[in-house]
Length: 301
Image (cartoon, rainbow, N blue to C red; front, side):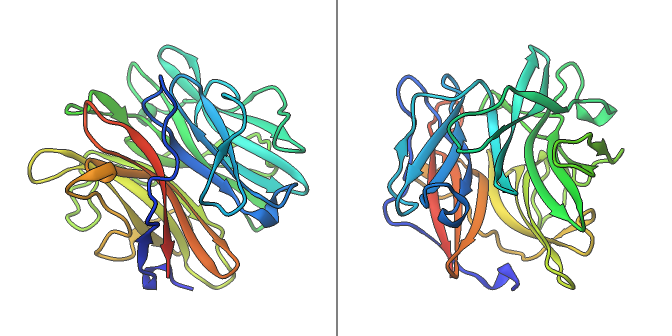
């Protein structure tokens, strides 16, 4: 099914998850549907700033409760199940100038193995001074694993923080690696007036392709609008091979609004399909330098 035929509508109770004081953000959701979990409930992993990776559970995927105060230091989690084990990839600080992608595994989503680094910055385009690998997204295709990731950075002057500049991919025979990177980025900044990313590539969530069908992915590119504001919106991409991507529609799937919790940027997302329904969990920011980030939900119909 081509996802560009879907129309996305926000849940009326958005945002569904907000930050807990003293944190000012909760972001980058990664979701497991009830058919994937040990207890038959929805599970969501996200990150705060002070509490690191957070874990939430829900009976309906709408009303969420936090599990504990925080798991471990890190941001931008991505969790996947394979052969009865859960693998959590996330961005982890290795030093003040370097971030890497770390991996932990679990049998029950509660007790996690020690972190092991699976991807580190090694290429020129992954940053100058500050070098980064983050925003992991893993898929399995034809018996191999592809780990899509963000690297490098662009400074958002009205926000006073950075966002990813490029998107790359690394591949492995085994889910735990070793991963070998493609030497060139897949997506970078561009002045394309349709696929707006004149500041940076942002992040990507790739959907495992079905035989004979096009690849599809969600992305949140970073751009400066006509008024000079830093912006982000969620778009659908398509590809014939998972390496060369183009925008699938002229219109974004989800975008910022004039006011409210989505006033500034709409970005990190995870789309899931469950019982015939598409859901998009994503976070948005209500301001630039001063702003909170919260997680909401949209349905694709």
